[in-house]
Amino acid sequence: MSMAKLSDMLMGIFGKRGGLIIDNTTNHPGHFVKITITEAAAFTTFTATGWSGTITGITFPAGMSIYADITVIKLASGSAIAYYR
Image (tube, rainbow, N blue to C red; front, side):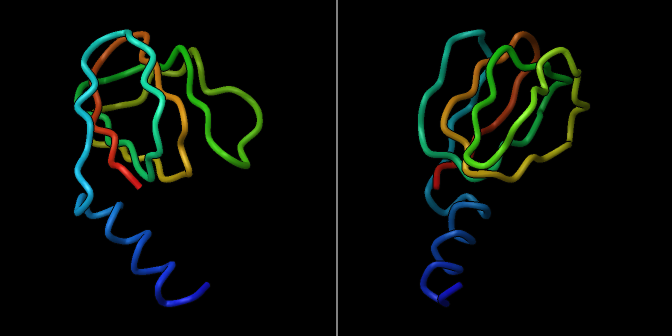
């Protein structure tokens, strides 16, 4: 991985590109690098490049972060912050 690519990725992870507070059950398409759970949450939809299987039906605790190339987030419950890539 080039230094430019690594720097770009880290800017997203550390919130330098901003984020989206998600506290509803609306579908949120976008380009995200990290999602941090702020209130215990479950997903209806979680689409990430290179991932297979499903994480729906699992409740994730507050404070947990998931790192991936995320393209769609839809919560069933809870709240989170999604960080832009």
